[in-house]
Length: 181
Image (cartoon, rainbow, N blue to C red; front, side):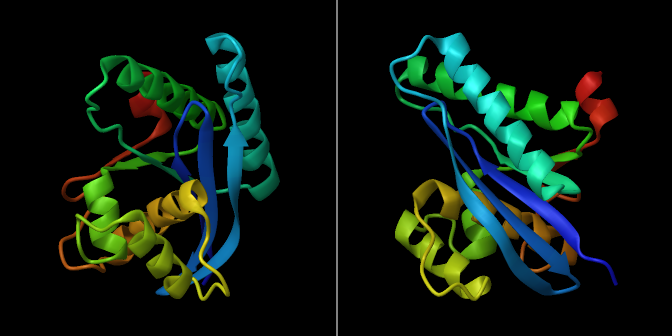
């Protein structure tokens, strides 16, 4: 059985987390994780360019077969929500441009799949990511969230975690053609 390589992404305009795992049946294996920095004091187009270049480099280096992006939540600050949406759109465009299918899950679905509780805190998510991937230390913030996205998709594919997510209920998996429509 060949492994499915999954790229999880926690989008942000200043910092975008990424996490790469391999799934062979029920087994999950850590491959890599990190952050793509978008720069803070740069004009928006330059920040987007850094994000697109960084995610493109991650895709080329790790050659995932599917990508998972956390859906944007509605923020109290409309400007922040709009900026986050632009970062997320840039990430999705980069992934689609690399001919990857893209799955989307809400933060609630991701936490439910990884921790078992939709209201779990960041520390709980990081702790469970480390346990599920047998890591010697807990990954940091954005990288932990990105790995959690990838784990959520792996659990969805395998049908784990009680309530199923993914294409069958809740989350959406879109082919490249669906994004182009």
